[in-house]
Length: 326
Ligand SMILES: NC(=O)c1ccc[n+]([C@@H]2O[C@H](COP(=O)([O-])OP(=O)(O)OC[C@H]3O[C@@H](n4cnc5c(N)ncnc54)[C@H](OP(=O)(O)O)[C@@H]3O)[C@@H](O)[C@H]2O)c1
Picture 1 (cartoon, protein in one colour):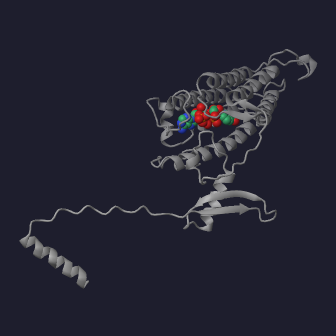
Picture 2 (cartoon, rainbow, N blue to C red; picture 1 turned 45 degrees about the vertical axis):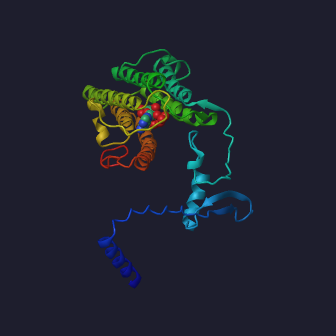
Picture 3 (cartoon, rainbow, N blue to C red; picture 1 turned 90 degrees about the horizontal axis):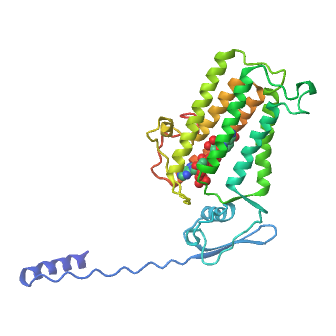
């Protein structure tokens, strides 16, 4: 304290007598030298080396190391990931898994959609060996069956067209074996639904024309909504880009739902199938709608989480798939 006070005094006295001293250049701060730790992670049982984290900060906790291990091992890396941004040092180990033969994402989507389109029509035209031989190539006497066929066909033709001309997928390929899983889901459900809706003993909906018209209205509204959202998502990124952006409502009223929902294309998709369920009043259709809703909710939650993680100012009012609910 004394030394400081004395120095201050001296400066004051000097000021009075001598000209003002030149401002001294600030001493350059020496960059802090951090000594990073090299941490080898071994399998507790086999002692096999699992990973080398060679740029661990000295202040890192065990939890930090656990999460670095988890991040480097558990998360599949995207093609555009940059090496120096990964939580690894100058020496690192990558784990490659051979996923076998691959197929482009778009092709998978097409095969997925062409199946239900064709399968449904086989039942609609009552091809041989589906129903009893006396019903071969006959047509249903219920007009709702014909409307349902038009709606089903329209839905899948729309999806095929969107895959070909609207969606700008950023995913490269998908393992060929995944296509069997995905196709069996869509194809089997289509066959199950089509079998009952086109069955010669099918009973039309309980409330008749009123119910069918309401359901048709819901179906068409949601198809339009779904298409509008796909167009908005398309316009978010230029061709060939993989960048994600926050989608916002546009002038098109069908997109206003973006104010409340992160993945409204799924909301409209579920709505379309609810309309189809109401129209056909058929249990397999209800089942398909519920399973589809569960699947899409899981995806929507994942996408919603990514939005929150990637964009700081992400609108807080939005829910993943159902406004204020889910
Ligand atoms: N009935 C069913 O069970 C069922 C199931 C699944 C899908 N579908 C239908 O198929 C449609 C497509 O499904 P999907 O799962 O592929 O939908 P999605 O993940 O929402 O993707 C649709 C398109 O929008 C792009 N996109 C999404 N978010 C984006 C963002 N923030 N910024 C820029 N581009 C973005 C996607 O590009 P990226 O490739 O870059 O993500 C993709 O090209 C659905 O909307 C639905 O109508 C139906």
